Image (tube, rainbow, N blue to C red; front, side):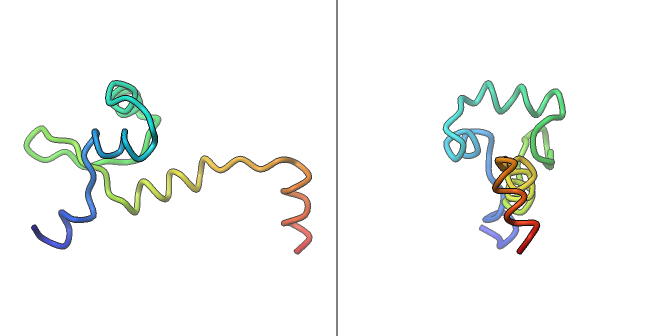
Length: 72
């Protein structure tokens, strides 16, 4: 397996990572609300870098926590 292929997850692997069903992952992909993906020969794969970027973008901060971080 190439170095690039090792950094790509399938929909089932992403579903396990997030504790979701594959159908939820498929739906978020279909409506464009999930992480960016590549599609090769009809197979969808997610770059670990893109997954992590998406996860960071989804981080939720309590207002007080956000204010503390802004002051530091």
